[in-house]
Amino acid sequence: MKYFYFYRTLNLETSEYYYGVHSTENLEDSYFGSGKIIKRAVKKYGRDRFRREVLKFFENEADMFSYEEFFIDKEIVEDIMSYNLALGGRGGWEGRLTDESYEKGKISRNKYWRGFLQRRDKNLEVM
Image (cartoon, rainbow, N blue to C red):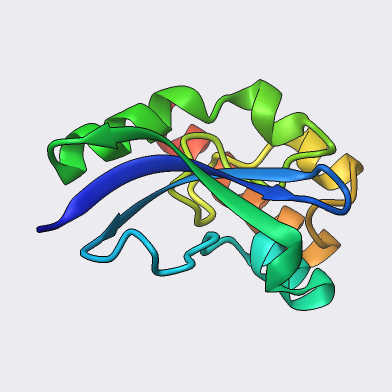
Protein backbone atom coordinates (compact mmCIF):
# COMPACT_ATOMS: atom_id res chain seq x y z
CA MET A 1 0.00 0.00 0.00
CA LYS A 2 1.28 3.46 -0.87
CA TYR A 3 0.78 6.31 1.60
CA PHE A 4 0.59 9.98 0.64
CA TYR A 5 0.96 12.51 3.43
CA PHE A 6 1.78 16.04 4.51
CA TYR A 7 4.20 16.30 7.44
CA ARG A 8 6.18 18.61 9.67
CA THR A 9 9.75 17.88 10.70
CA LEU A 10 10.80 19.58 13.92
CA ASN A 11 14.37 20.23 15.05
CA LEU A 12 14.17 19.36 18.75
CA GLU A 13 17.30 21.37 19.50
CA THR A 14 16.39 24.68 17.82
CA SER A 15 12.59 24.43 17.28
CA GLU A 16 13.11 25.12 13.57
CA TYR A 17 10.68 23.28 11.33
CA TYR A 18 10.07 22.04 7.80
CA TYR A 19 6.79 21.23 6.05
CA GLY A 20 6.60 18.84 3.15
CA VAL A 21 4.89 15.94 1.47
CA HIS A 22 6.02 12.36 1.02
CA SER A 23 4.79 9.20 -0.63
CA THR A 24 5.99 5.85 0.64
CA GLU A 25 5.09 2.25 1.24
CA ASN A 26 6.83 2.37 4.65
CA LEU A 27 5.54 4.87 7.22
CA GLU A 28 8.63 4.23 9.35
CA ASP A 29 11.16 5.17 6.65
CA SER A 30 12.66 8.02 8.72
CA TYR A 31 12.15 10.56 5.95
CA PHE A 32 12.68 14.15 7.18
CA GLY A 33 12.58 16.08 3.91
CA SER A 34 14.42 16.70 0.68
CA GLY A 35 15.13 20.41 0.95
CA LYS A 36 18.78 21.47 1.04
CA ILE A 37 18.52 23.31 4.34
CA ILE A 38 16.67 20.54 6.18
CA LYS A 39 19.21 18.00 4.90
CA ARG A 40 22.09 20.17 6.13
CA ALA A 41 20.42 20.59 9.50
CA VAL A 42 19.92 16.83 9.92
CA LYS A 43 23.58 16.30 9.06
CA LYS A 44 24.66 19.03 11.51
CA TYR A 45 22.47 18.09 14.50
CA GLY A 46 22.00 14.36 13.91
CA ARG A 47 18.88 12.38 13.03
CA ASP A 48 18.05 11.83 16.70
CA ARG A 49 17.47 15.59 17.15
CA PHE A 50 14.52 15.60 14.69
CA ARG A 51 10.95 14.38 14.87
CA ARG A 52 8.58 14.00 11.93
CA GLU A 53 4.86 14.38 12.51
CA VAL A 54 2.37 13.25 9.89
CA LEU A 55 -0.29 15.95 9.80
CA LYS A 56 -2.61 14.79 7.01
CA PHE A 57 -3.04 11.74 4.77
CA PHE A 58 -4.30 11.83 1.17
CA GLU A 59 -5.81 9.30 -1.19
CA ASN A 60 -3.56 10.28 -4.09
CA GLU A 61 -0.47 12.22 -5.07
CA ALA A 62 -2.37 15.03 -6.81
CA ASP A 63 -4.33 15.90 -3.66
CA MET A 64 -1.14 15.73 -1.61
CA PHE A 65 0.72 18.20 -3.85
CA SER A 66 -2.31 20.46 -4.07
CA TYR A 67 -2.48 20.70 -0.29
CA GLU A 68 1.25 21.41 -0.04
CA GLU A 69 0.94 24.20 -2.59
CA PHE A 70 -1.91 25.72 -0.58
CA PHE A 71 -0.28 25.32 2.84
CA ILE A 72 3.32 26.48 2.31
CA ASP A 73 2.73 30.17 1.91
CA LYS A 74 4.79 33.36 2.12
CA GLU A 75 4.49 33.51 5.91
CA ILE A 76 6.09 30.07 6.29
CA VAL A 77 8.82 30.71 3.72
CA GLU A 78 9.73 34.03 5.33
CA ASP A 79 9.70 32.70 8.90
CA ILE A 80 13.30 32.57 10.12
CA MET A 81 12.44 29.37 12.03
CA SER A 82 11.32 27.61 8.85
CA TYR A 83 13.62 25.47 6.72
CA ASN A 84 11.24 25.90 3.76
CA LEU A 85 12.60 28.05 0.94
CA ALA A 86 9.93 28.03 -1.75
CA LEU A 87 6.25 28.88 -1.90
CA GLY A 88 4.10 25.87 -2.54
CA GLY A 89 6.80 23.53 -1.36
CA ARG A 90 7.78 21.98 -4.67
CA GLY A 91 11.28 23.46 -4.57
CA GLY A 92 13.37 24.58 -7.47
CA TRP A 93 13.95 28.09 -8.73
CA GLU A 94 10.68 28.75 -10.54
CA GLY A 95 9.94 32.17 -9.10
CA ARG A 96 8.83 30.99 -5.67
CA LEU A 97 11.77 32.34 -3.71
CA THR A 98 11.17 35.50 -1.77
CA ASP A 99 13.48 38.41 -1.03
CA GLU A 100 12.97 37.73 2.67
CA SER A 101 14.47 34.22 2.32
CA TYR A 102 17.69 35.82 1.14
CA GLU A 103 17.64 38.62 3.71
CA LYS A 104 17.23 36.17 6.57
CA GLY A 105 20.22 34.15 5.40
CA LYS A 106 18.24 31.10 4.34
CA ILE A 107 19.82 30.96 0.91
CA SER A 108 23.15 31.94 -0.58
CA ARG A 109 23.75 35.05 -2.68
CA ASN A 110 24.31 32.97 -5.85
CA LYS A 111 21.12 30.96 -5.39
CA TYR A 112 19.15 34.09 -4.61
CA TRP A 113 20.31 35.82 -7.78
CA ARG A 114 19.65 32.75 -9.90
CA GLY A 115 16.08 32.72 -8.54
CA PHE A 116 15.76 36.48 -9.00
CA LEU A 117 16.83 36.27 -12.65
CA GLN A 118 14.38 33.45 -13.32
CA ARG A 119 11.55 35.43 -11.67
CA ARG A 120 12.48 38.47 -13.73
CA ASP A 121 12.59 36.50 -16.98
CA LYS A 122 9.27 34.84 -16.20
CA ASN A 123 7.68 38.23 -15.47
CA LEU A 124 9.05 39.66 -18.73
CA GLU A 125 7.44 36.78 -20.66
CA VAL A 126 4.05 37.69 -19.17
CA MET A 127 4.30 41.34 -20.19
